[in-house]
Length: 31
Length: 497
Image 1 (tube, helix red, strand yellow):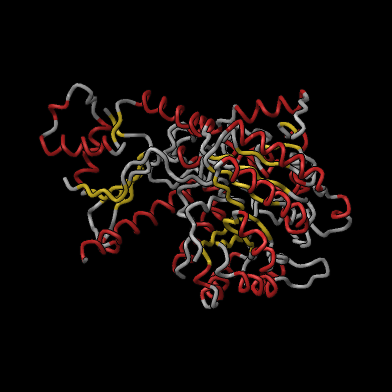
Image 2 (image 1 turned 45 degrees about the horizontal axis):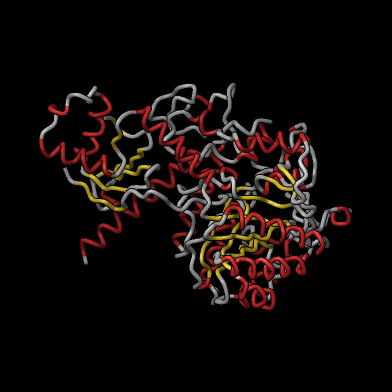
C-alpha cells in the first residue's frame, strides 16, 4: 500500500481563461 | 464511500521507471498521486462493493490508504454529495470576485490576409470593420471603473485583442494608462495582456506599456517560415515570418512572450521545424510558453464579422478543421467511455474519435514543444474558461458587451452595452450565458472540472446550441499520460537526490 503524493489537493487551482485564444499566463514569469 | 467520479489513472511502465505503479489524478481537487497497484485495486474494490457500512472488510493498512485517498479527494462520501460539490464549484467560479477580466477589441481590422480568416485585409473588409474611437475608449474606462468599484477584485486583467489590436495604438495606450491609474488608486493589481500577430510589436510599444502592468504578449506563428508565410501573409502575399521574428528578438527579455499557432492538415507537419528554429534562436530562453491549437474553422472570425455563424455548413466547410461537438443524435461515434455516449467498452478510446486530428495534433505538438525545452499547456488544466465567470467581459469596438471574444460582432449574442442600455435581445442573451452548463450533458466524464463541456463558441456555431458540449476528451487523456510520465520522472529524480 504505497502512496506518494505528487501534488496535494488544492481548494483553488489555476484555470485557463480561454484555452483556445487567450489562455491564462498568470503563472508565467519573464525569462 | 466510493471512488470520486473525477479520478483518472495511468498505469506506469518500466519506461516511466515505475513498473506496476499507477498515476492517479483527481481533476476536481487537482491532487496527483503515484500509488502501488494494490492501492488502485483498492479503489476498484470500493467501486464494486456497497462499502458504506462495511469498512470491516478492509484491514488496517487498507483503511489508512483509504483515509489518504479521501483526504486527497479520490474517495468521496457518495455520488450525490460529489455532484452537489461540483454544482457549488461552478457557482464559485461564476461568482468569483478575485479577478475582474476585461478583453477589449480595439478594432476588428487586421493588417494580415490569412486565408483561413475572413477578418483582415481581404476585399473591403477593413474599410467596414469597426474600430474603437477615443471617445468610446473613454466610456469603456468609465464602465471598467464602475465595475472595479462594484466587484472590488484583487486583480484586474485587461487584455487587448482584435482584429489586430495594435492597429489602434491610441486606444491601447489610453486604456492602459487610464486604467492603471484607476487600479493603483483602488489598490488593485493590474495586468495587461496583448494578443497580436506581432507585425507591429516593436520595443517602443512594449516600453510604453511596461509601466502600466504589461504582463505578457501572445504572438501567433502558423508553422515554419514557409507554412507561416503561406497562412499569414500580407494582402500582397508578402511573408510576415521574418518581420515577426525580428520583432520578437527585439522585445525579448522585456516582457513575458508566449507563442501560439493555428494548425491545419496542411501545416501540422511543419511545426517541429518551427520548434527547431525557435529553439536555435538567441531569444529562445525568453519565450515563456508555446501552445498550438487547431484552426477552428471560421467560427470565431465569422461571428466577428457579423455573419450568420449558423449558416449552411457547405459555405464554410472545406479547409477548416471542425471541433467536434457532442449532442443528442450524435452518439459520440459509439466509442464513449462515459454514460453520455452510446456505449462502447472502456477499452475503446474516448468520446472524441471524430475529432482525432485536432486532439491528436494538439497532443503531438505539446510533446514536440516540451522536447525542445519550451513550456506548454499540460493539456489538462483547460477550464472552466472565462465564459463561466460573471466578472469576465469582452467589449467590442462599439461598446457592446459579450460573454467571450468568440461571440463578438454577432450582435444577437451581445449581453449588454457599456452605456447600460438594456434591450430584450441583450437581456435574453445575458440570461442564456448565465445559465450555461453544457457540462451537465457530460454526465460522469472525469474531465468536467477542467473542461466544463468545452468551447461554447464551437457548440453555438456548429450545433446552434451553446448548451451542448464540444468534446476533446482524447486530448485531455493524452495530457494526463504526459503528466503521469512527468510525475514518475520527478519522483525518480527525488529518489536519486
